[in-house]
Image (tube, rainbow, N blue to C red):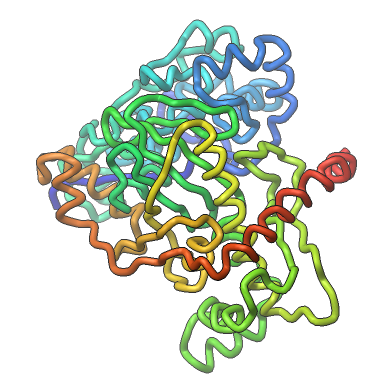
Length: 433
């Protein structure tokens, strides 16, 4: 084995003490318990001050608000913490003993100068967080250590194997989809949805997410939604019991059967529209009180209508993010699909039809793990550079072109999708009180 690469979910805040012990469970990326901490911080410092540094609006899901929550609600955790690590940073620590912060995950701290990839320690203090908690910043492909004897015993890896710092799962997936040049775009179909547009400079927009790419001297303008593949997974789990039974009998996946059923429903789901805001919504709404909605239910609607509307709602959220990026001056052409949802030909075609963008699907449906492996390969010199890595590993297997005959029906569906949130937003917020 030449090296080990690691990727991890966004916005973890894993407190470890001087001996490396984890002091408490870390909230997930979609956790919004730190809303009050965000509100008070914005009132004290101003949104513009924070945005100017990090290139991102403050979100309760991000790392720094979670640290402030620790400080206020579990002070014993905050006081005992030696460092606060990202998810992949923690795995790298367990493998090597090195306490590091890769560039691609730094933006979650809000005191990270994303354009310069460095800490603003003065702002960190003003925010009420001790800078001693900030790990050393490293490049994502940088070898930060080797597998220790203990880690080798626990994992089966060879001791002494080089370990790269790794990065954000979405950014690793973007690399694994072959997106490394400005303007190239990844379309994400994992648990979460959205897209990542490769940039050659930091280009922030308050509606979107700006982070360093795992590729050196590149940035990503990202749209991150809560309703990606997870929305259909929720639907299948709660309402697809029959597909689960039939799938066992046919020795196939229940999602393949949902695909088959949804394909029989006309584009636009005959007026059924889904808002996939199942845990609030991230970009471009940034509304933790947003709720999931099915609109247009009548006696003619079947489970297949609901399944297709779920897919279309996720596609509408992708288009919403792409439009915000275009308004910010980040233009896209062909999209590169990654994640489990890319295995669905129907869903990928729906996304092409809704967005009006061609979508290519690389051979690997594990682009995130592939991207992490490519980081290790570049770090140890197995690849000359990222262009070489992509040329050797990423192959496109199919392409979906937008179909003009369905443009009008999806234009109508998208307008209704956007209007429904605006009409229901006040009610959603009242219900949250």
